[in-house]
Image (tube, rainbow, N blue to C red; front, side, top):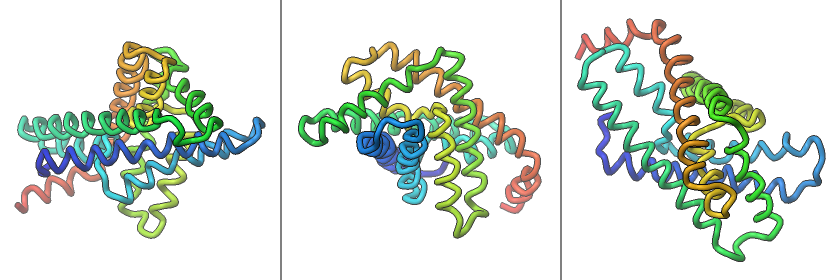
Length: 240
């Protein structure tokens, strides 16, 4: 939370751009496979690509910040920490979304990808709008819980870090759960090709997904697991 605004923005912008490769990888895989019942099982492996790039590249992703940013708030309970958390979330979310929109716009350039890939992109772009507000919130809660849990597990995973990332993000992808940044690439693309409106993006995708991701990341992980490390964090603060 002590990083400069410029550093946060650049890292978060890179993360938003990187998450676009989850969308692209899924489309490329889908366009290469026959329409069979098992195709989604393979296509969802592409969903993991963006997360691998972002996490191993140590780029700033909004949903990763729910755990690391909320724990100090729950421990210190002062306005300074709350303000720092709000600053972190605001900057990272803005730059993440900007990166996804830029990536979606680049995908619009004619001739870059085959007609089959473009068709698959169009199909995938409709998925973020497939549920009602409540359904999207619930899907996003599960996604937020899983991503925050992944962040919780990574420090102790050591050489198994890649396996943890692949396993958990694959579950998010195959379950069609809603992630505000990964899904923003698809949702933005949908707006650009006319499959959805800006209002659909803001109120049908972004608002419920952001709400659900935050509820999942904060309440189901940070608060539940807070008690197990609060003493350690308090002792650390006392030693400073």
